[in-house]
Length: 416
Figure 1 (cartoon, one colour):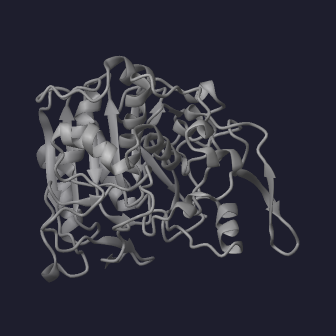
Figure 2 (figure 1 turned 135 degrees about the horizontal axis):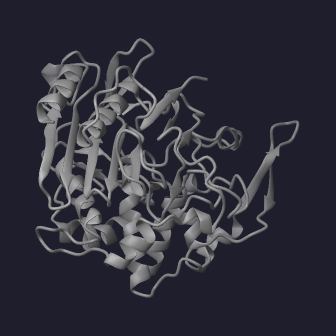
């Protein structure tokens, strides 16, 4: 497996098809089935760039969400939080949130009170009504109409940017959005700690994740997020980073981490909440099985729209689908696939991603996981997704895809 994957990743990085990229596959015992880091951190200028390593920090974007979900589930275990609780019990401003119904002839947003009240389970399953403006065009229009800044959730870190109205009444349907950010507000309210302090004390420090935090690790001179142009070229952007002193940490996106650190965390989840080497436990086996690897969406609404990506901002995301052709569900932490993939993971594996093309999956049946980390926009980048698909195919003994986006893999890109 290693020669095959080394060749695929090396070839892509050598000709700048991808910026610096790193990937790992492990089994449940912690045995490394494959690990590699390729290319440079600045694809625009290798003379001003460090080589990519398994300890190179990157913005996790939405790969942060599973940390926040674990934090909330720790509070459930302690009896301080129930999934049926109303969000407004802990974050009173939730009671004032309204639903965006449209716009009048002058372009003024038309809002109404919610018909239902949001619960913690709805936050964890993305069924509250919160959206992201880069995925939802109505939220984009609302932000512009009210003079707000688009897509500033992490870069600005103001509390106000998380207050855009709901797209529908809580519990009506699934739409991926700011739900986990609000879940972070709940964690803060219960713990009387900021979210970064709580996650540091109860997750990253116990696991020894020294390079996972709200800030770029000391000694790192520069961190680049790339943008792929229409001609396929890559341009490094040194300015795209999280706010250094945000008013609020968004539980959906605020962390920086490395391949080594994030894989340690994922290995712990795969082992039902306990790290097989250190013996550190962050969740009970019962919680992992019942909340993370059990479909929860059926307790709220249908699973329509899960895994389907429709962009409202082509600079940040392409259109496409994760696990196209397969039924999808959602747990209290990530996407689930109730049926197995024809070229990889088993049924009821958990997975998710980060906006700058970071992807992971955990297979509790086969007892292994795969992780690919890059730093390029827009989301669902064909070259990075192809490499992540190749990683999965190799892990399960399947031949390489003959073309990018070949049906049967873990992703597909659509146009328009």
